[in-house]
Structure formats: structure tokens, C-alpha cells
Image 1 (spheres, rainbow over the protein chains, first blue to last red):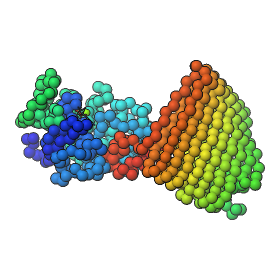
Image 2: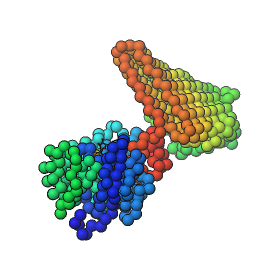
Image 3: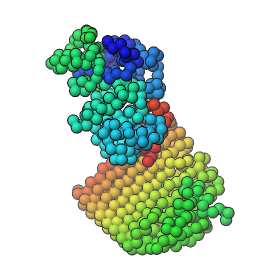
Image 4: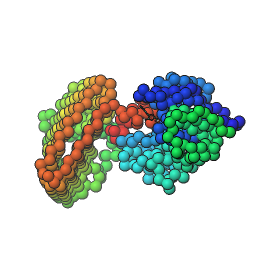
Length: 250
Length: 310
Ligand SMILES: Nc1ncnc2c1ncn2[C@@H]1O[C@H](COP(=O)(O)OP(=O)(O)O)[C@@H](O)[C@H]1O
Ligand SMILES: [Mg+2]
């Protein structure tokens, strides 16, 4: 990456991971720079969610080789909550449903306090009316899109140092997409490093830098415009068998 | 026990006596077999007799009466040992509406038995909602034996909710039976948290005997330590367009054991009953979501369980 101002905050170093006897992440090396919006882009099945889950340290993703460095220290041995308390969090592609818990309880949990105004502010930032949502149950009565936006609100309320957003547009209707994008900019505005995982060219364009992965390998890294062009023109028709080797676009 | 005041019993159950000891709130406060206080509102009559081991109360809400504020009932045994047998005969006459908020408090129990026998009649188009909260101490020395037989007449509504999430359960056997006539609606809910060597047995049965009647049985239970929970819920639909659902969710931790036996029976081809049971540890996706926001595993688990029991 050619950004001289940004400073490395999170490094994926030579990370490989096998799942079900298959190599899903293949010697990945990625540096994420503080305060930027990065995209990790690739076709379905490329290994993007696996990478996010591995960085978060979810169960089933802890046995990787290589290392993950956050603010200069390895986090490889840390549990999910320890990583979260260091400042890393993840928004799932398919957020959980919480039986019996209110939306406000989820926001309070994320911000480790019961500041209703701050919780309301976070909901507003994702385009949800606080009065209508704070006391609603965060269960199956919410649509998938509402759950995505509430999860994003809880992350805004949490104010993490790094957030992994896994397919933030999935289940979101076109009208609400702009709220997701503005929330990404708000996160950046509050100093959070954003890593957006996507296979959507539209979402990719919201980023400043991008990493293209295919078959668990890093194929390209560089500015969003170049990666977008490559992704749309080359990945689209490609059967992504026999991934090419890394080239760097500057 | 003449030195125990109504306010003591109320306070031990977590109620602010000032909220209840007012003129517009009907109440009945019982310690062991003594009525410490009672207060009525128009349309509500309470006929209480003290027995050797408890009370025998007939509660009637006159036809068409709507009791605006919930009636408070408080049953307690404050010493370490005791027996309390409550006999309730409740008659909510046609078109009447009432809700009861009952607290049962045994904060110091080592050897307390609390038996409740309720015979409940909900009249035509009448509404009766009963909420019972138990507040137990942490020594587990309570045996709670609530039993109820309920009949809901045409168009009537009955809802009962049992909550025991503070303190140790001890031993509990819930045995409720409800029959719904035409277009009647019933809902029976239990939310219980068990720990230590607690034993929880729930047997709820509903009979949807009338056309278009509806019924739901819900049991939400969390057990840890060596606690055991056994839930047997039965819903029988006998009439056309009767609809019912049985839902049981149990979270099991440590060496605890939970079982669920939902029995659904349909005796009319136009009736429809469903059931759902989920037993297991805390959902890992929910847990990891909360942990990825910084909660440790214990706090995350507690929050999820509090949701289940809320
Ligand atoms: N637990 C697993 N066991 C075996 N294979 C898995 C597992 N999880 C994911 N995979 C496989 O790994 C590949 C990458 O999956 P994923 O990271 O979800 O892709 P993406 O998010 O890029 O669409 C896919 O081929 C998928 O089938
Ligand atoms: Mg994915």
C-alpha cells in the first residue's frame, strides 16, 4: 500500500487455514492501515468470511498457521472477547437473533454502559428511528436488514479500533444501502479502521484500498479503482481455478 | 408471628409497600396462615378463612366489573421453617376483567413447604390474568407445589405467568390444567432458573374443547449446577378451528439436566396444534456476537439467559 500517512494497525502474516481437510486460506499476507476503509473482495467461496472469522478468533478458526498482529502484538492466542477488548469487532454476514433481548440491551452491551442517548444516536446513524427500535425485541420479528443495521449501530456505539464488516449490504434493500455506506463513513470519522468484506462492486467502491482474494490467496492489492476494474472485468468471467500470483497495482 | 407486618412481607418480595398500600389497589397479604392485611375495591369480593396451615380464599369479581389496577396478593413464610397451604377459589364472572399480581416470598427458607391449590373459573367474555413471582433465598430449602384447574368459558381469556428467577428454586412441581370452551383463549407461561441441586417439574395441560379456542403453553428454563428440569406439556385440540402451540426452551449448563416432552393431540381434522422444543447450551452465534463486543463469556451467557427468562 502506498499510503504514507496511514500506519499499520493489523497485519495478517502468512496465515493459512484448513477447514474440513481443505486449504481455505493460503499463505495470506495483508496489512491494514489505521483509519482507512479497506475492502477485501472476491467471488463467493474465495475465503473472505473465513479470513474475517480468523481475525476475530471465532471458534473453529483458531488453528491457523502464521500470525495475526494487532498494534504490534500477536493476538493469535487471544479469545474473541480479549480481541474485542483490544478493539477488534465483527459484523456478521447473517447477524444472530436474540430471543427476549431488547435492541437497547444489545447496544448497551456493546458500549459497556446504559447511555440511552448514545444508543439512540447510533440507531439514527444507521437510519433507524430510536423511539421505534430501542425497546423492540431483537428477535425474529426483525427483518434481516433491520438486524444488519442494528448490528452496525451496536458497532458504532462500541467505537472499536478495527471493524470487520462481512457483506454489509446483504439483506439490505436499495433504499437503506446509503445508510450502511454513511455508517461506514461515520465509523471512519470516529477513527475506526474499517475492513469491509464484499463481493459487490458497489460496496467495493466505498473503500479506499482493496485486497482481492481468490481461492484463499491474495491476488491483487491496491487502490479501489484499479481493483474494481480488475474485479469486474477479470473475476466476473473467471472460473477462478488456478489462481494467478500476486501482482501489486500502484 | 404477630410482629410481622404486611410491609415486611411485601418488602421481602421486592415490592415497595408504598406502591401497593394505597386505596385504589386491592390486596391480600398472608404470612403463613395469617391474613395480615386485605383491602377491596368495588366489584371484588374476597372471602378468607384462616386454616390450620394456611388460608382458604374465595375471590369473586362480579359480572361486568373491570378492576382497573392489578390486585396484589402476597404469600410469605419469613422464618426458616414452615408450611403454607393456600386454597384459592377464583371466579371471574361473565364480562368481568381482573389481573392479579402475586408474590410468593420465602427468603430464609431451610424447610418450607408452599402448596397452592387454585380452582379458577373465567366466565363468558371475562378476562383473567395472573402473574406469580417467586422470590426465594439462596439456600434451596423450599418445596413449591402449585396446582391449578382452570375453566375458561365462551369468549373468555386466561393468562397465567409463573416466574422464579431470583434465588434457589428448591423443589417445584407445577401442575396446571386448563379447559377452553368456544372461542376462549389461554396462555400459560413459566420462566424459571434453577441451580445447585434444584428440581423443577412442570406439567401443564390444555384442553381446547370449544370451536375456535386457542391455547399456548410456554416454558423457558435455564438450569446450571446439578439442577434438573423436566417439562411435560400437553395440548389437546378437540374442536374445529381450535389452534394451539407448545413451546419449550431450556438452556443447560454445567452438569444440569433438562428434558422436554411435548404432547400434542388433535381430535378434530379442522384443529391444528404445533410444538417446538430447543434444549442445549447457549447459542454459540449469540455468544460469540456478544463476546465480539467485548463481553466475557460469563457475562454474555448471563445476558442471553436473561433474555430467555424475560
Ligand atoms: N467449516 C468449513 N469446513 C469446510 N469448508 C468450509 C468451511 N467453512 C467454509 N468452507 C469453505 O471455504 C471456502 C470459503 O468460504 P467463505 O470464507 O465463506 O467464502 P466467502 O466468504 O468468500 O464467500 C468455501 O469453499 C467454503 O465452502
Ligand atoms: Mg462470506
